[in-house]
Amino acid sequence: MARMTGGEALVRAVVGHGVDSLFVLPGVQNDPFFSALYDAAERLRVIVTRHEQAAGYMAYGYAAASGRPGAYCVVPGPGFLNTTAALATAYACSAPVLCLSGQIPQRYIGRGVGLLHEIPDQLGIMRRLTKWAARIEAPQEAARLVGEAFAQMARGRPRPVALEMPMDVMAAEAWIEEEPPARAVPRGPAPDPEALERAAALLNGAERPMIFVGGGAQGASAEVRALAERLGAPVVAGWMGQGVMDGRSELALNLTAAHRLWPEVDTALAVGSRFQRVQMDWGLDDALKVIRIDLDPIEIGRHARPEVAVLADAGVALAALLPQIRKTDRPRWRARAAETRAEVRALLCAELQPQLSLIEAIRGALPEDGILVEDLTQVGYVSRLAFPVHGPRQYITSGYQGTLGLSYATALGAKVARPERAVVAIAGDGGFMYNVQELATAVQYGINVVAVVFNDGAYGNVKRIQREMYGNRVIASDLANPDFVRLGESFGLLALRAAGAAELGQALARALAAERPALIEVPVGEMPSPWHHIVLPRVRG
Image 1 (cartoon, rainbow, N blue to C red):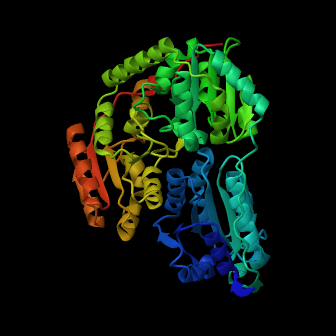
Image 2: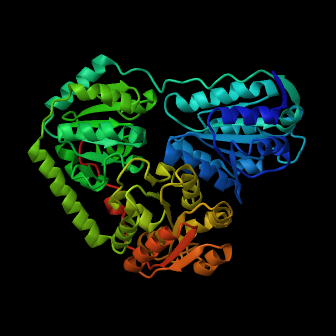
Image 3: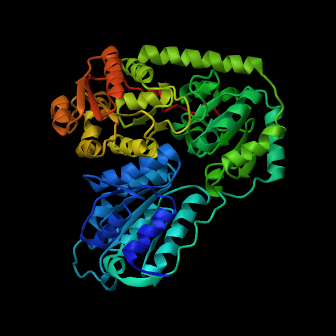
C-alpha cells in the first residue's frame, strides 16, 4: 500500500491503462490532480489547450486516428460544458474518449449554494452524453472506477465515458492498495455459428451482392477487402467507413454510385454501419436480403429486421465467415460496378468544380498514409464522395453530428496519436475560426498539422441555401475575416496563400516538407451545391 492523494491515485490509474497523452485546461478545482501530473511527466505527456472545446476535440482526434482511448481533463461547470460538442461528436462517431472533470466539494454537490463553477447535476449531463459516467467519491475508488471506465470503452460499441472527482477528494490522502493490472475485456460475444452459416448461404447464392461499411469496420479492413474480392462485390463506405476499402479499388463505391445500383442489389451486407441512409432514404423491399454484422444489438434492428443478424466484432465475425464463402468472380456485376463508379466520377468532375480540383490537389500532395480531417465546408462535403482514402483511420469526420469547427483541433489530436503521419485539416473560414486559438497550441508543442482554410467570406452553405430556397433573403451568413496568412505568421506558423488547385498542391507539398505547423489560405468564391449527389431519393420499396 502507498499513501497518496485522490489526484495521485487518479493519475496512477489513468497511466496504468495506457494513456500516454492528456489534453487539458487547468483550474483551481483540479489543482491536486495537476500536482500529480507534474510528478508523472516522464510517463504522461500533458498538452494544455487554449479552450476546453479543443481539449475534447483533440481527445476525439487521438481516438479516431489510433483506435486507442483519447483522454482530456477540464474544470467542472463551464469548463466541462465547453467540451460537450466534442463529447457528442465522439458519441456519434463511436470513439473511445475519456472525459475527466473536477467537481465542487463533495458535501455541496446538488445543493445550489453558488460555488465557483457549480452547475445543476453535472453527472446527469455526463450520463446523457456518454456511454457510462461516474463520480469518484474517495481516493480508494479511483483505480476501480477508472478500470470500469476503460472496460466500458473496450466492451461492445466504443463510445465516450466520463469521470468526475470533487476537489476535496482530489486533495484527500489515503492508503491505496497496489493497483491491479488492467484486465483484458472481450470486445463482444462470439458470433453465432448458425447465423454465420445462414449469412454465407445468402452471400454465396447472391448474384448482385453489395457490402456497406461504417466506423465499426475500421479494424476489419483486411477482412472486408478479402471478402469483397472473393465475392466480386462492391464496397460502399459511409462517412465513418472511409478507407476500410482502398478508395482506388474498382470495387470501392461512393454513396452516389451505390444509389444508382441499389435497385439491382439482391443481397446487402452491412458491417459495423448504421445503414441508416439506405434504410430510411433509399428503401428496402421483399426482394432484398439484408445481413447485419454489428456489436450493438439495438443498432442491428433499429430501422428494420434483417434476414440475418450477427452480433459480434466485425473482424472476428468476418474472419469466421470468410472460410465459408466460395470464390465467385461475378464478372458482369463487377464490371457494372466499375462502369457506374466511372460514370459518377465523371459527373462529379463536371458538376462540382472547383471542389474536385481542390480535392485532387490535396490527395496528390498528401502521402499514401496521410490523414485528412474534414470540417463542414464545401470541399469537405464533396470529399466524402470524391476523396480516395487509401487505408483505415485516414479520414476523420464528425459523422452525423456535423459539429462545425472541429477539424483543426481534431487534427492536432490525430497528429499527437500518429506523429509519423502527415495530417491535414480542411475547413472553411467560418469553421476554422471556432478553434483558431489552437494555432498557439500547435506551435507550443510542435504539432505539425497543416490547416487548409477555404475562405469565401461567408458561411457558404447557409448563404447559398438562403439565395436558392428563400428568395435571396441573405441574413447572418456573411463574415468579416482576418488576413489568415498574417494571422498564421503572428502565431509562428509557416503561412501561405494559394490561388486555385495548382497553387494549393504546391503549397501543401511545401508545408508538409517543412515539418512545422502550417496554414494555407485558399481564397474561393461561391461553389456549386453537392447535396443532390448526397441526399438521394427512395428507389426501392
